[in-house]
Amino acid sequence: MSTKTSKQTIHSYITSDPKICGGEPIIIDTRISVRLIVKLENIGKSVDEIVAMYPHITHAQVHDALSYYYDNKEEIDRFIEENSEEYIRKRYKGSPWLK
Image (cartoon, rainbow, N blue to C red):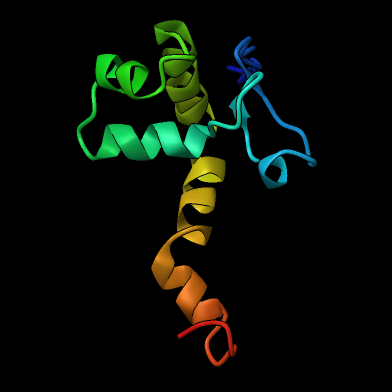
């Protein structure tokens, strides 16, 4: 008989606070979301390039953000979807501020 054990991974560089970025997971002491790091990687940016773009974060923080993504893929993919232009246009269709 096999049992599946759940192991919670600790991400020492990632936090979430409902008062910051709507509660999205971010790199501690920044407003850089895990979602942003994932989107940059998805368009082909390397960790070195991401750190060059945001010199106040470290390679370890970027790697931890990516690790957090792979541990919580469904959650971050939802944030990516909900922040896409297509999703926002569809959700707020007919709103006067959306042209």
